[in-house]
Length: 75
Image (cartoon, rainbow, N blue to C red; front, side, top):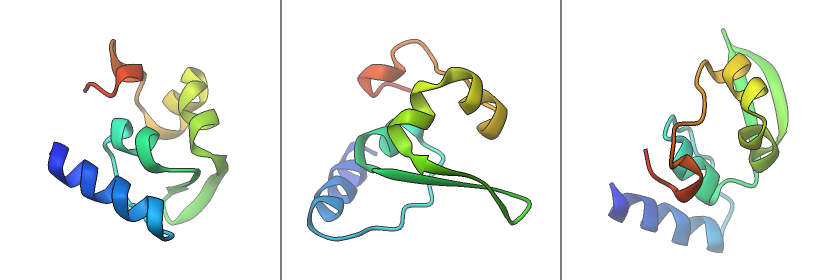
């Protein structure tokens, strides 16, 4: 998985990338913006970092909370 994450990060540094991903550590690493869909409808747009730093909003929109070590890119 680390090799894939590195490749995505390199690609994102060079060109716009549309990333559809559930791995929040990878999202945190490479995404500038975030669009959250629920049943095909947009329920959030904004900065990825701001969304992922807001534990309550992340839990409400994504159904997950920050795991210990998540800020270090661990799962």
